[in-house]
Image (cartoon, rainbow, N blue to C red; front, side):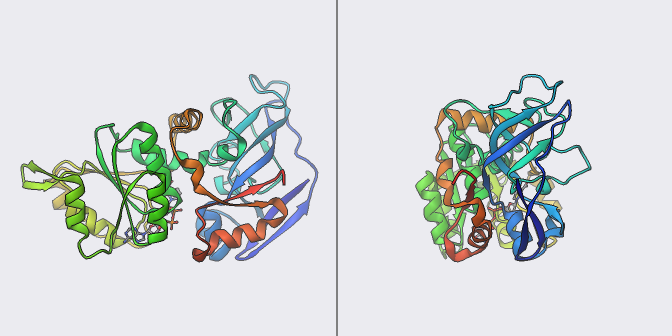
Length: 339
Ligand SMILES: NC(=O)c1ccc[n+]([C@@H]2O[C@H](COP(=O)([O-])OP(=O)(O)OC[C@H]3O[C@@H](n4cnc5c(N)ncnc54)[C@H](O)[C@@H]3O)[C@@H](O)[C@H]2O)c1
């Protein structure tokens, strides 16, 4: 079998290796679809170590496929099962980082395979291409669950990249009616609109007026304020947090999903006085994974629209280049191992 080994920026090698062999408690998956994540892009264009992808190691971590071998002690998983694998738990803790678990290899060993821990069986109506979206979808789902979004909440997401759009679809799937997505890129706002969001360009001179028009105002202990309950930051830049703090009403909830590359000086007196709840949302939990699979099964979101490009496995380099090119219009670039 082939596996892809990260060597450094714009450099990987395909290696021919022996197929992994399942020990008594393990399973082996043959990958059918794998997505390129933003961290793969960071490794490809800039520095793998910054995202836990080190030279000489496998990479790729958004994948789904079919079980080809199970150990004698593995319960409830059989050869032929169609599954999504949780990259956070598929290798023994501390041994291999999540981003190095081998999503760009033809087969992956799942250590101590267990249903609903590292192996999630897929409903019949969820195909493996959709299932390869479960990982980023979980990140978006956790982004809203971290601040306990209710159906009646009014929500604004900053950032219409793949993660912001996963958040949007998570909210749509939950039945949240009023969701605005703000970005600086009109092409991405178009994608968000097609998925069901009300969209705003956050650089528009009348941005604040437009936000007020969409959400309306409410009376708070601090006087009238724009009526937004939840802010989800999927952009991670200073102007966004400045805007959030300018907009946020008394007792607003703020979920930070984005990775801030620069330190942000948070006005804690304001946070105290306005009783803000600011929650970091990193990765996801088992409950988020079940929610992602259930939303895919119900088909009540537009998450599949995230897939903009599909490449064969031997075109991995082209796939990484496309995902790294802001001009490509890519959201989720997918590798199809069956092509
Ligand atoms: N918390 C986690 O577990 C987790 C997991 C994966 C990714 N992330 C992070 O989530 C963030 C989003 O990921 P992505 O893949 O969608 O990234 P991305 O870079 O594709 O998307 C970010 C979007 O923010 C927009 N943006 C920039 N400045 C803005 C502004 N002033 N106003 C509004 N929008 C603005 C960009 O135009 C872009 O569309 C990144 O920081 C990523 O590192 C977090």
